[in-house]
Image 1: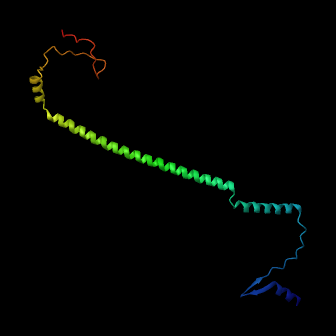
Image 2 (image 1 turned 90 degrees about the vertical axis):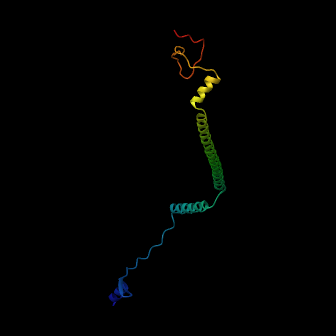
Image 3 (image 1 turned 135 degrees about the vertical axis):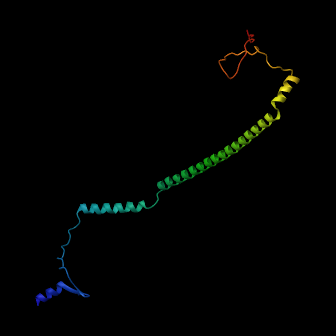
Length: 163
């Protein structure tokens, strides 16, 4: 019968399954009083927990730094937006000036064409010979020379006659 009691203690019925029960562990002995090292560790853990709890709150220094950072960010955003608006305004002014330059260039070309078509070469010849008394140059009146600069000529003395 003692054996049956022992077997009954080792198995129990849970639903339709039979499982083994582990033997009861031996009763533990009482722990000796905490050693100073363990006390120090528990004190360190408590101190760390207090520090962690304090770190969850804002202190004055953190709030000041956070406020300063936000103010600097807002000022820099304002400066960036004002610079961007000035750049956009200058780009618009440049576009307007380019349009004006194109219109002036087109007007200049139209004026040149109008002037060129206003007088023909025959009309210019008639005015030059009849009204102004100009004549064509004769052979030997034209003197050719080589200049240092082809852009302009500065006359320092009379042009020598042809030989």
